[in-house]
Amino acid sequence: SQQGEEDPQALSIQEGENATMNCSYKTSINNLQWYRQNSGRGLVHLILIRSNEREKHSGRLRVTLDTSKKSSSLLITASRAADTASYFCATDAGNTDKLIFGTGTRLQVFP
Amino acid sequence: DAGVIQSPRHEVTEMGQEVTLRCKPISGHNSLFWYRQTMMRGLELLIYFNNNVPIDDSGMPEDRFSAKMPNASFSTLKIQPSEPRDSAVYFCATVDQGGYGYTFGSGTRLTVV
Image (cartoon, rainbow over all chains, first blue to last red):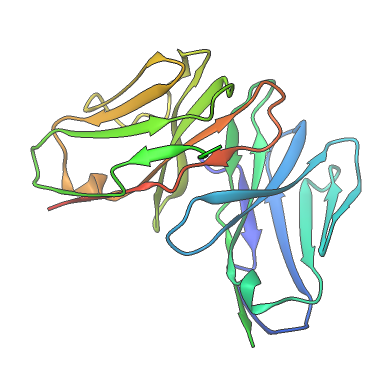
């Protein structure tokens, strides 16, 4: 079963705009990760945030985590056409390496 | 490093045939995961190995599915007999001891007709 659900399911924006995707999950976690998947390709790891962290940055990516609400958000600033992809959150399942992926957000960035 | 290597990239087979998907993990990554991706169910974890030992196969849909990891350099996922509902993209992913971020292969797109 899926642990996380992303919102929105699909998002279309113009280049230069910011894109925000949200993820909700169900059980306690040790960390939460975000991945990108380009069409026809495997997933690529973007960023990891631990349960004791509230915000993390990596380049144009900003991730927040609210464990009280069991939610996370991914912000992509100054989006580019190359950011067009599906984005997934993933949470660990207890003290294992196992990751459970959310449903994904399809982002379309128009030039 | 060539990354996680999966073969074949595409497989079309007839219902009832045996299908074997292959994965070569990144050297030194001691955990290996098999996922299946469909539009209807998203990414589902089928099974994962740690140090070549199967740890959790609760996601394997039924006995027609089996997976092996005979050594640290190779894993297979077998479906016998295959059915049209097995059509999906199958991904292999690996992670090292630190567990920070999976590396995915490019996937095998399986079509069972």
